[in-house]
Length: 108
Image (spheres, rainbow, N blue to C red):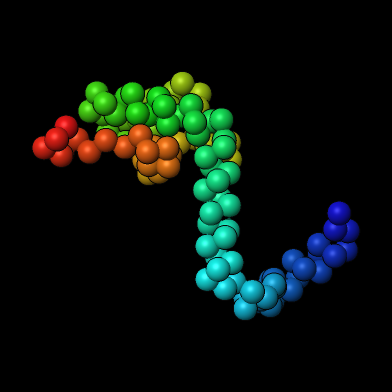
């Protein structure tokens, strides 16, 4: 673990505006790798799997993403970071699990 003294020193540098880390390490490949790791973590999260399934079943009835977020929150669902769902998060989770249905499509 980082000692308290090191944490204070890093915090002080940050306050002074010193850029910590090496931005050159953030190559497009590294950014893509990080993005894929986040997606994989999201796909494996039990809360996301259950929330996406429920969101899909509610969306079939024509509810908006905002209404679905309210429903998920009222049922006690939390995001993978322990927060309440917002409409855009519900939409992203549904898309992640390919539960999105285009209700405006003539094929629906």
